[in-house]
Image (cartoon, rainbow, N blue to C red):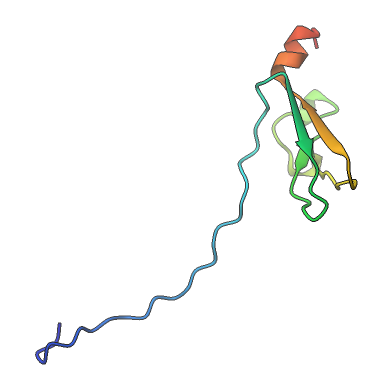
Length: 85
């Protein structure tokens, strides 16, 4: 506060909001059903064809492009255990 009772303030620089999303993960459940959003291309899946790429190599991630009116079905770790691989 200055001597004449006025408050000195610095203008805040507007910051960009962080992107929405979550870090790479495996689905622990059995089955997830997602209604695709035609305007959103945010779902990515990892394709690991051999043991050499299981460390999350960036080249293995593929963007899932939505198909109007379609559902995305994700099988999780429990489905893999139940089906024995």
